[in-house]
Amino acid sequence: MTETTAPQSTRLAVLIPFSIVTLIWGSTWLVIRDQVSSVPPSWSVCYRFLVAGTGMVVLALIRREKFTLDARGWRFAALLGFTQFCLNFNFVYRAEEHITSGIVAVVFALLLVPNAVFARAFLGQRMGRQLLIGSAVAMAGVALLFLHEARLSPRGPSEAMIGIGLTLAAILSASTANVMQAGETAKRYPMIPMLAVAMLLGAGIDGAIALVLSGPPVIEWRPAYLGGVLYLGLLGSTLTFPLYFGVLRTIGPAKAAYSSVIVPVIAMLLSTLFEGYRWTGLAMAGAALAGAGLVIALTARRPNR
Picture 1 (cartoon, rainbow, N blue to C red):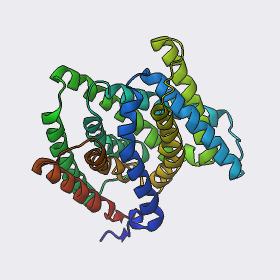
Picture 2: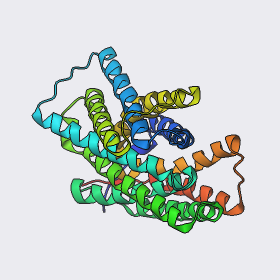
Picture 3: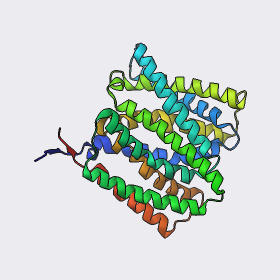
């Protein structure tokens, strides 16, 4: 008979950072929506990760962690910066030019699918029956939320398809970075210095892309825009990415991706408070299923090898 170990995902050391990340990332969709209103997306992404990378450098110095990366470490940081802090966010910011932030958040919940597949393919991590059941329940909830959002979307079908396609591209980019962080190479280097380098390299690539696609730097000096850059850079990135990747290394990419399942629910709750979002029976059923699937998946026991 196969022995099982208690799920690490139910420990406070995982639940607390998991909750912080989920709550903050649930709020970022509203802020991103404002960031793309007047500034080209790639420049907004560039500013975000200049702030985030600088904050990460300061954090590393406070913790007295050394920036000792060898050639392999620099290659890893460059690839992480390109996939996570360049491709992922450029696709997300551009998606919000075509569809509402709610739909982007809902579609991004599909992150758990490639995370689970890539973790199985590249890390040998198996999905147990309870994790599969939780995934099915959660995705049923996400489907209801998506149906609700799609019905209310004022945009046409062609715009919706472009936005969804960009979001799916972002998901694949983010999932690649997630699996990289769960691998052995990432564990050879201190996380905070590695993320600082990756964010700053990513910001450099973002700036180069912005220069080619949008021309010279554009910035809006409106307080809400500048505050949004600081919020997304410091709270939405400097604080959350070390917490998220720490959780990911502990419980694996598949379970860690469940933050993306509950994020749309939080995004909609905040939209209720600040944008007059109106809940329907369909939306409430979707939120309930997403939450139930999350609980089922995170409490799954892991088979011993």
